[in-house]
Amino acid sequence: MADETDLKAPPKDEVQVRLGPDPGQTKVELDLDDAPFLQVPEDDLPTEQEDNAPAPPEEDESAARNRKKKKKLLIMAGAGAALLLVLGAAGWWFFLRTPPPAPDIPAPEVIVVPSKPAVQVQPDYIKEFAPFLVPGVDAKGETRFLICKFSALSKNPGLGKEMDHKMISLRDAMYYYLRSKSSDYLTDSRNRPAIKQDLTAVLNDCLTQGKIEDILFESYLNE
Image (tube, rainbow, N blue to C red):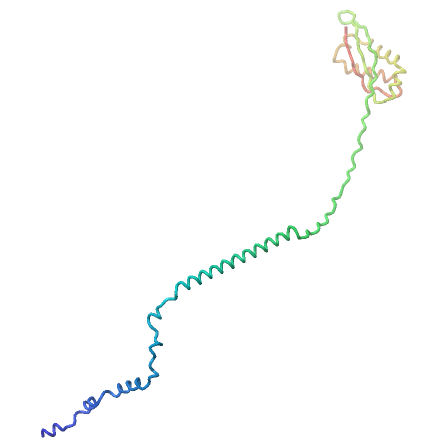
């Protein structure tokens, strides 16, 4: 019996273990060994240093400086070109441009206003008389003498000849008028306008070629 027990077959699972490794594991090992093309070469595998290595800083800085320089040059070139264009346009505008013709402005209408004809003022012609000596009696009964000298004013230049021709009669008429008035009347200054008017009328009564406009008192003294 003991021998039969020893000769009993072991359990199925234990036998498989003892026979060798797991078939699935053996298959994986065989595939890796038998397929070398599936293995990645060590040279192709990136290293951590290569992945994490930054770009050389010197090349980046020089490239950035070159780009800035190029940008500045482009800006300066554009500004210079714009300035040249502005200067060229200004020079053309002020020096080379032909100014447009001046518009035809109609001449202002001249309105002639007829002026009034100037009134020609006739000059005054003065004729002087020799002094008169007219006796008189004042209020006190005393004899006084009025010494007076007159001039006749007219607008007619030919009236002087007539007056020269009739001078004696003109003087007599003036003397008789003065002699007919009292000494108080003749010496009162308030009667001057009336005396002038009366003498003018006396002379015009004797003249025919014109008339006397006014009588001027050259001197008028009562002594």
